[in-house]
Image (cartoon, helix red, strand yellow):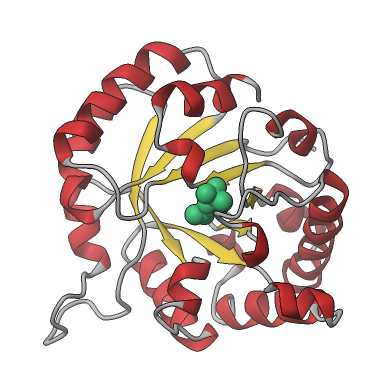
Length: 250
Ligand code: PEP
């Protein structure tokens, strides 16, 4: 079964607009022949300029978060339609930093995901267990709850647009990558839950990305696993040479 391969960068709260545009100009020249789709989740302020810089390339610009409302008195928040208006095509939802630092619940993430689909933004649903949950053998239970809650109202048709990113919290920004075997076991379980919800044909089409300290040295071994269809990358997506090296190894 061939699935879309996606290498997604998450820039978190880094870069100015000029640095971002320079990055894209540089990246363009290095990844033109890549077969993987290249996604970049950039800070809100640079969506518009980066989307223009990426026009006509295989680089797709998106956001790192959104609110579940379309508008309203929500100081400091941003709506999906605003992201779309600025040029975003996708949005990360449920990133572990949103879940753990900003205390976002599974229920809130579910509402945002429903809104993102209505606003024609492709959701990348991030899920993953903490070290403590893994140590107490709750990984599968945590993943299942995160998936089933977030996808509560997603139809079969809409599910074809959703991407899932498995990001064990203990591997994000720590330099501690899950071994390909650990990652594959979690990805196979995620696909099993998706199959239970949507059937084999749809679950076989959904791209499941791995995230957590991915770099040029470990991408190939991860991508060799059957259920790993790409990566969501934080630190190693900030430098165009390193990010291009990861992309070109896929
Ligand atoms: C992330 O922020 O989604 C991430 C996986 O970060 P890093 O690659 O730095 O671990």
